[in-house]
Length: 110
Image (cartoon, rainbow, N blue to C red):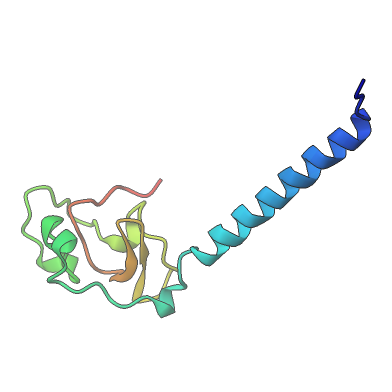
C-alpha cells in the first residue's frame, strides 16, 4: 500500500505553482511595453495609421467622426505623460503617437 504524506504533496504542488508563476512573470516582463522614449514615432504610412486616419495635428483633421477638441492627449487609449509631445498608445503598441495628434479610434478619456 502506497500512502503519500499530504503535507509533502501540498509542498510539491505549491512549489510547482510558484515556479510556473515566476516563469510567467519573467516572460511578461520581457514582453512589457517599452518606455515611450524608446518607441519610434508612428510613421504616417503605417497601414493601421492610414486605416484609422491618424494625423500628428488634430487641428487639421477633416474626418467625419472628428469631434472638436479631441486629440491623442485626451484619448482613453493614450498612455503618455502629460506635457510630453509623444507617448504610447494602445492602438499602436510598437510606436509613440503625437499628443496633439488624432485618429478615428479616439475615445474620450474618463
